[in-house]
Amino acid sequence: MKLNLRTWEKRPFLLIPILLILMLAACGGGGETKNDSEVADTEDNSPTAVPEPTVEPTPTADERLDRGIALLEEGAYAEAVTELEAANLQDPDNVEILANLGGGYLELDRAEESIAVLEQALAIDPEHPLALANLCTVRGLAGDPDVIELCQAALAAAPDSANVHNGLGVAYFNNDQLDLAAEQFLASIEIDPNSANPQNNLGLVYANQGKDDLAVEQYQKALAIDPDYEIAYANLGLLYLNSGDYQQSVENYTSAIELNPNQPGSFRNRGSAYYNLGDVDLALENYEEAARLDPTDIQSVNNLGYINLDLGQQEEGIGYLQTALEIDPTRVYYLLDIALAQTDLGQTEEAIASFTTYLEAAPDADNRAAVEAEIARLTSSNYIEQALANEGETDFTNPASVLLAVFRAAATADYATLPQLCDPQGENDGDTALICEVTAEHELAGDFESFFAKGEIVGDVVIDGEFAEIPFIFGPDNSQEETMRLILRDGQWYLYEF
Image (cartoon, rainbow, N blue to C red):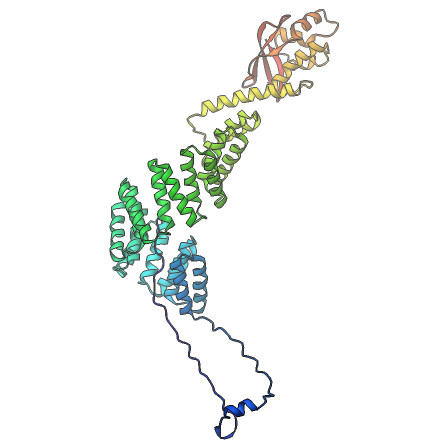
């Protein structure tokens, strides 16, 4: 959705004639000249004259102003600003220069500089119509809540200015007063029917009112006036995108991009049209170009993230969603999708961290219970994964590792670690106490080996406060199901009961 305004105005060129005064020096006395024969018969031994270098005169402030306005008319905004800045240095209090320079800054999205020079212009001439119109526009685009009053003042100062009507229309549009905006754009068109800007802006009003046919008609009128009017093509592309005519959307955005290849929004929306046409590769290309042109374009980065996830390219998808979250940290829901993708990749610890960060950022989330359950499941899974990965060692901070130590002792007949596994406060039940008492000479050593040597964890680790429960199977044929309960003491887990 793009509004555009003419932020400069035409003024007549000042043609300054250069008078060349030819000085003729007479040779010889009495002012006489030699005849042809004398010239032909006389040898000239004088040195060859060196021509004087031509020095280009420094342009005046008015000349630079004229050049700047001409460049604005051509759409060469950067070059125009360069000329107008030079003119401003020569004549700092020239309101015409300041008003047009403010318009140039506006076209280059340099809002703060635009406001500064326009306010300087209005301090000199509070009723200057172009300065009022441009300040009305730039402050309106910046979301200034008081802009309508400013634009109405501009209209009072210049009731017959098409630019001011257009600017007031933009102010009304940005305040969702669409009917009043349409009135001002129509007034601007009546005054200057050959300006593409208000035609385009009126089309935008119609599009927002759901009058698509009228909107298309206005955009086409703008293009009939100015066939190189990129913004009208982009607005047509958006209208067709929203109405589901994706091929027409692609065609119009392509025209807009050919005229202005530096507009990320056109690439982004063309990418969406391609995506809806089923061409995922071209969609990705366009989103990538939009993100290259504007790394903060969160919509494009968002789309790149989710398309890559849909394609099973989890690492790429996670990277884009993490970038999107950096652009806008309030979009905490990205953390959920990042966590799910990390889970798919087996990055359990990273997934737990992402889910935990989500709950910290959204403490009142409706899905809190479900997320907490998933964190618990992943934590359990991670305990078992870590214990299996380090099966030769006993990690007392991991309840699964403590239980695996029992199975390992039975399988290897190495009972040295068993006494360390039971509750140091002696509150464990008799069965777990017996495990911790087994030695090679113990009368039950053979039974211990027979029952626990093939033991396996068969479910999740469930932690509830200072207790952990782990389902397992054991027995001579590994068919008996049991649950081992462990207790937490000073950050370490010990066998408690089963």
